Structures are given as C-alpha cells and as structure tokens.
Image 1 (cartoon, rainbow, N blue to C red):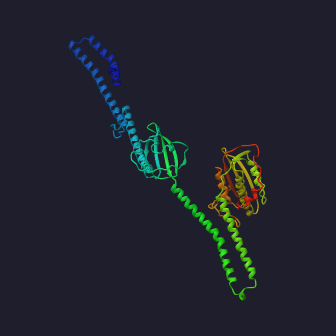
Image 2: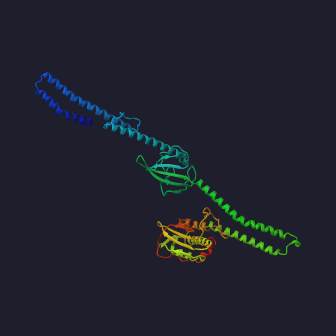
Image 3: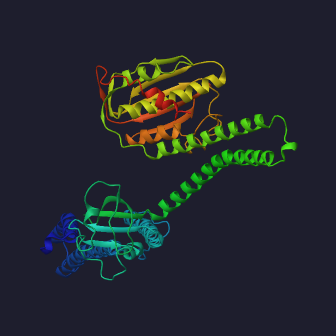
Length: 466
C-alpha cells in the first residue's frame, strides 16, 4: 500500500489542506505589511512550524488510537480476552465509546468461551461415562470420534481413529434405515444393537453420528419379567384347579377306605358329585392350557384386501346379546388377514358387550376414521369403564368367572402383527364406558367389500374372546 493511501496519512493531508488557506493568508499579510525581513522570516517560520507541528500531533494521536483499537481486536481474534483498554472515568468522546464497546465485547466473549468450555467438558464426561457406543465419521467414512463404550465395542484396540468404517466392520451402520435393530457381532459383544444415526457439521464439514445401544440387558430384563408374569398366572390358574381336585380326591379316598359297615348310605351319590367336580375342574384346566397353546402359536398373517365397512358389519351381526351399532366412516380397504382381523374385532365387541351387560343397559358402537393413510377403528361401550388398566394385557388375567384372559392379549397380538396397535381408555367428557382403539396401517379408499363372511369364525372366536 502506498503511503498516501494509508488512512492516517489521508487524515493528516486533509488537516494540512484545511489549514493551508489560513497559512497562506498569514504569510501574505507578513509580506504586504511594513515589517523587517527578520520579523517576516521569524513569524513565517513560526506559522509554518505550528502548521506542520499540529499535523504531526494529529498524526501521532490518530495513529496511537488506531493501534490501540487494532491491538484489542487482534487479541479478540486470537481468543485472548484478558486484554482491556484504559478508559478514563467521565470520558465520553467517540474514541472512549469505541474502547468501552470493545471491552464489553471482550467480557461477553470471555463468558461465552467459558460456558462453551464447561459445556464441552460436560459433554465429554457424559460421553465417556454412558454405556452407549458413540462414533462420528466424516464424509469419507473415516472414524473421527469414539467414546470408551465404542472402544470396548470394537475390542479395545488402540489406533481406531483415522480408520475407515469398512475396516472396522461398521459399514452397515452408515447405510440403511435408522433407527433399527442391528444383529452384527462385534468384538465387544454379539448384540442385538439398536442403531441410531444423525448428522452434524464440525468446522464446516459434514459428519455422521452413529449411536449403538446394547439391547441385551433390556431384553433380558423384559424376558425375566415376562417369565415371572407367566409363571405367576400359570401357577395361580393351575393351583385353582389342582387344589379342589386334590381335596376332593382325598375326601373320596377316605370315604371309600372306610369299612363297609361305616360307610354312609349316600356314598355313591357323594362319589358321583365328587367325580363331577373333578371332571369339571380338569376340563377347565384343559381349556386353559388349550387357550395358552392357541395364543402361543398364532400364525403369521396372510395379507389380502379387507373392506372395512363389510368387516365391521359382519362382526356386528355376530353379537346378539346387546345392540351393536355401526356408524360408517370413510370407505376404506385394508391389507390384512381377514380371519385374524375378524378374531380381533370379535374379541373387542364381545368384551364391550360384556361390559354393557354388566352395567345393565346400553349397547356397543363401532366406528372408524382415516388418519394419515391408516385406519383408526373404535369400539365404544356404555359399561362401568376401566378401574385398573395395569393388567389389561397380562395373559390369562381375567375378572370374568368363565373367562380365559387371552381375548385382549390375542387382539393386541393380531394388531401388532399387522403393524398396528391396540389401546383401551375410559371415555372422556363425563361419558360412561370405555373405548377400544385399533390402529392399522395400509388403508386406502375403497368402494366395496372384498371378502365374504366366514360362518365358522363365530364359534372359534367365542372361546377366546372372554
């Protein structure tokens, strides 16, 4: 940069130009007035020196101020927030205002930097302590970050950073859908793993964040709880049948073991009654075990078109104990297993009818609506409502005298096999009763029925709906 293009030089030249007319006039007056040569030279020299000295003082002050501001800004650029400018109290000129703002900016940046350091330290501490593998890959698939859990997952080897995903066996983690369950076997464990993936930018470059969660502990806990519930329910039901059978069998053995002279005259009648009780309880236990076997071997659904309107009307016609009203929704066709969907809806309608009968009045309503390319079908009853929802879907748990406790469990299992869900909730707005809501996907607009009623469904479904 040429010297005359510098900012401070331009300012000084502008000041010299501003003072030049006054200097020229002063020198002209000295020449025109009747002064001695010595006086003229002395006064002229004083005027020129004052003119140049003022410009030099202006240059020095301006340069010093600009250097101060430059040094402060350079310190901020170098992330040195300890440097401050001295600003006298009460000084309110433009330069003092600039210096105060720079000092305030330094304080703000210092606080932000301290907060960023603390947040970064917390994040690093959390990443190192959590039992979840966290890895970050750059756009070329090179591993750039791995916490302790990720290092253990990959066998605890050093030098992981800088290697590509393929060499680490992590290439599947960067492809496909996420989240999903990954069954890959790593040196740190066989899995299964829950894979989650996200994207972020660091220093302007794109990176992929991979999170792998070990599902073994959660699955083992779920399996243990499932076994506990199953053993508890099976033990309760089997004991309810075996206890009276054992008691009656011992009583009959005692009666038969008496001498003929001491036997009661109605012994044959007691024997018949006792054996009938044993027969009934044995049959009940057999039905219970058959219901369990039916629940355990539900086959995969065979998908086909099912018209929702015809499906609802067909199942509603099977229930004769209470009035069942179908409020039509939009004309929709489902992709599902017609027989299993019949079983699902029959169980829900029968439960709703049982609730209505328990209340002594009211009926059942079936309605549906389309929701985000899916079907939401609702079965509404006017019964007493749900007092306890904790055991609704516990297998074999029932409050009915002749129930098996698999109706709702089987219905939910069918809904989930079709990629849907089932929930039971009490009705709102002060209405009595509850609602069973079934959500099933793959619904589309339709014009009519695609499946004829199966007359054998009612007898088969009645055994598991209670």
